[in-house]
Length: 367
Length: 127
Image 1 (cartoon, rainbow over the protein chains, first blue to last red):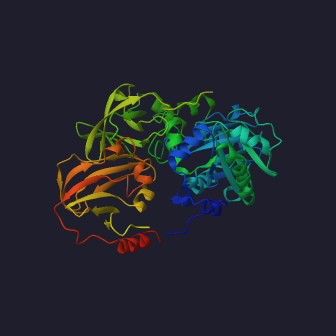
Image 2 (cartoon, rainbow over the protein chains, first blue to last red):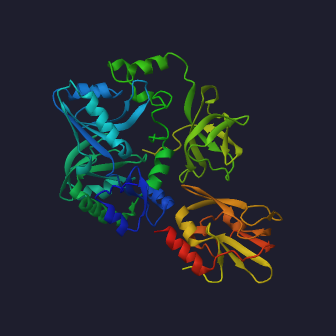
Image 3 (cartoon, chains in turn green, blue):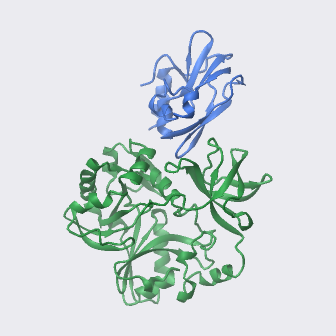
């Protein structure tokens, strides 16, 4: 087994007594001593600080940068204002996922693409392969970039004293450049938790300084360092997709409920033909949210959805929901069954248990 | 770290003989730490007899689930009903308030580990 990669905050996590796990080849904190429930609650009610330096960053710049990113992704890149971000994907010709990502518009012809850690090398190769014939540079900045995510309702009040950049005017899914604790960074009002918050991108070598400054500023207000364990339960409650679960190279964008990132009328992009064909016929399956009816029945990732003992679908992600207090999950089921209120059966360790399809997202913050 | 009056299994359950032919059973501090926050403990009904090694329940944490296996053969006399509302007791007090079942011992304890042997096992697993 090859050695795990380490973020610039590895020593900081160990000093905080984090429990470390292998996540996509990276040595990452799954939780700190407070535990997943406390970290989850801190993000929902106060604030949590995540190390997301493992994420990949690819910069595309040059006269054809816009044309290349439009070609590579289904969302309408030309509609992005300078300083705006959107969620999108890289799709294969058949409409399934290479990865999902954020696109930052840094300039008229300059974009920062933020991709999943585990797919970073594959993504960079994919962008390079398709960049042939486009007049632009494609640079993998992943290993030179640190990233932390401050998430939760107190994020703004914790971060503002550390920067002269006015944070309040930064809209959700917008960003700016500034200094935090004297360190140059990209300040992005984005996140993967369903709460207000900021993601800060900086030079790898500055990450620990900025992490320590935010921790020091936030701890008196109840900020906790937060690991991948609560990151997963937080994003699940908000029905945010995770690669390898709700989306992968066997699942199509439309059945994943991501039609909102697919702009079929924007012109050509990779995967468009397949998605046009898929849209012309009824989708055979859909991603739905469910709850199990008994407290003891806790569904988990990849368990089968069954009818009369036969598999008819599968759970993509599931867990006991810390915020909602019930056992939740997301699953692909045949479209005919995909109705809110409808019953489905999940097979849990050989037992078929009753579940009910419920509206998603399971949790939505009060604005 | 590991109480000397308990017997242990390789699956990280503990058994505490009461001296009157009954015993309490739970999971170790090491096991609860590996699971993280426990949110549900599924326990058997009183009166059921289990063989040594047989699954008698499950313990669910936020992130995963683990089977509970009988350290020794026995019949369930009582289950810890307070875990239904306070599963966190398994994390907070695994050898005390976090006990899971009380059994009437019908098997022997010969092949269980003592504290020293269990400590060696855990030490090997975590390195």
